[in-house]
Image (cartoon, rainbow, N blue to C red; front, side, top):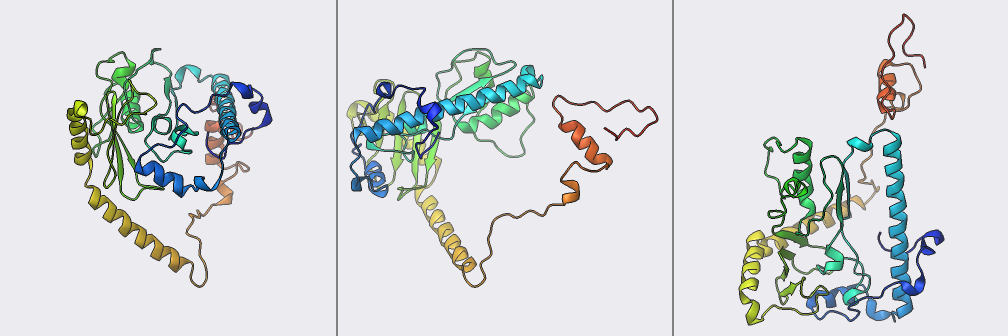
Length: 323
């Protein structure tokens, strides 16, 4: 689901409009980045009413219902193909949506509604259960390598970010959690922004902005910024050190600006004189693109593409390419 918040009528009608929940924290958050986002999205130019908010959230739920149906269709196709017992399913997303929480919309912040995403795995050798530890999407690659090799992945050619979640899937919940890092260098950011999640605590770091520290267990709606509170000084110090060790913020900013200058230069050059699109334009050999001739390799491609797999016929002296 994503903005714009629109959904087909059939999915809108699945939910009673009056039952759609409203934001838990509707007021604008009092941190520098939230104020920047509010201004950047020009939210101060419009009067956003309760009806606007409820309509948007209702449509978002409709999109969730639409997605559910599409996933169900995929599952039926896999079962029909006879692959149900040999398929690993992973349901996840790249970001959430604030949907009016903290007075904000879209993503672009490290508040829970934007940064938390579903991660559901189902398939052979995945027992039912719930892991409450914090993990990251960068954990998926080492997890898939581990899963595909049944716990004995080859040594990677270069270091991998993330860690395998296979032990947690097999029941080792004690070592499932770890430090989770999220980076943000897009709309509204004037400096590289970093989130560090360690256990129940979340720390947000951006050079020039006041730090933010939340206990997302005791304070799931992130109303109370604990940064600067003497009671949490040790936690703040440890997470600040992790953030500082992740990258050199000043060097990252300099590299980003240098990259932007190069891309602006290239863009201006491409817009001068005869305009040439930079889009990838692959050459295609139409004679090999369609299964419409008797080439043996085309036949074999067609056979292997069938679901379920169509085994080659036993030669009987005739032309095995005739179908």
